[in-house]
Image (cartoon, rainbow, N blue to C red; front, side):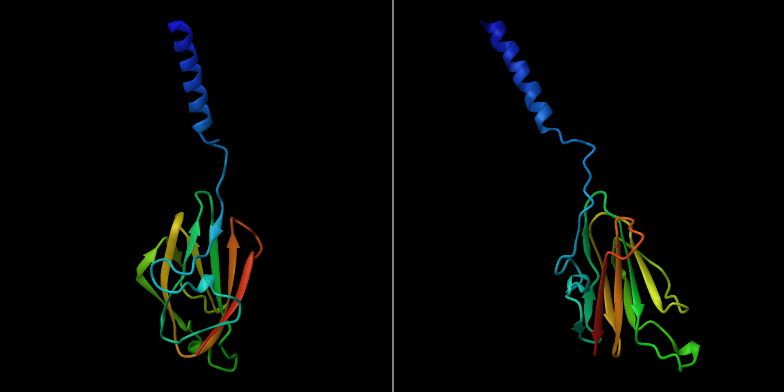
Length: 157
């Protein structure tokens, strides 16, 4: 009788162990855009056509699952082709000392845009501020997508 209980206990523990282990082939590439993470109201969570307050600090945040990837491009729609090329500049500012999980690239004066790539998973955020008045589009490329998965337009004044 003791032997049968011992064998059943071993079988039970094995079944319990197997059922508790997650399938390692499962992936988590979910990306969410919380209202805020570390550095203020998250511009990536705002609705399309939202209006921001100039010179106020905002967050640039996402929550990435363990296998998620994210690239974001901000396109400056506030330039004027009649202005001398040297006067075209980004009218948003990023606080490089308040950056969690992003690589950012220099402002591209040819395309009037700036690229950001997530370098880690979990909560990522970057402090960003918009200057003067203007408008931009934000294009998100989620999980190695070749085409834009989310686009939104923002303006600030």
